[in-house]
Image (cartoon, rainbow, N blue to C red; front, side, top):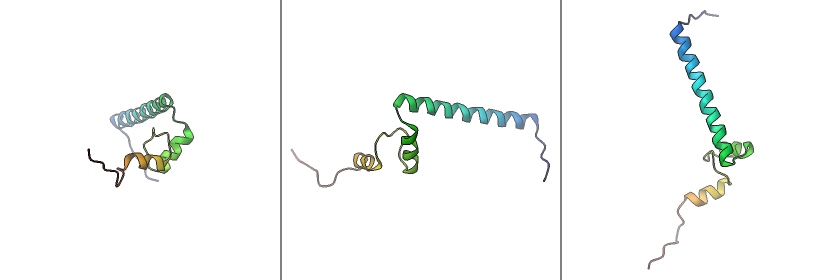
Length: 75
């Protein structure tokens, strides 16, 4: 195994990056709690490529986001 030398500036950069990631993670958890998204719902959203704060199913998401076809009315 090769030895790697870290300078103090390298170590500071790494520590700052880790702290920033932890702060972002904590912020996301707080927002999720405020919006009422459960851990199970968040996992479902991530698996199906949905926004993290969506509270429904993937079918309801696509139904809401896709324009309806043949539903054009003129006045």
